[in-house]
Image (tube, rainbow, N blue to C red):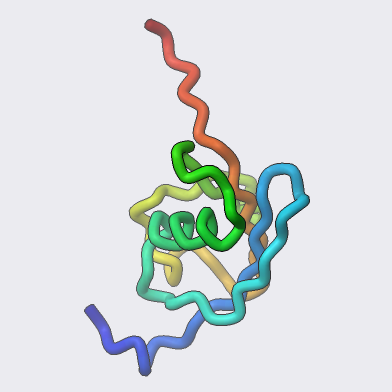
Length: 91
């Protein structure tokens, strides 16, 4: 893993799906994964931790994969919306 002293952080804003809980993230480590970011946001927003969440990147209108690197998927100023993951598969 790279030395985080040399990797600049990315400034983001994140909210829950209702828009009631909004947090500013001034320095997200660029080498972290989206999954790590989501876990941190769930705790910071005091969301139920027994529910799986996914992050929607508003700029691109898509859900991010948990294994994507923050530096590859996000840009400073992006808005992420956390929403519960719903599996609507057939049984």
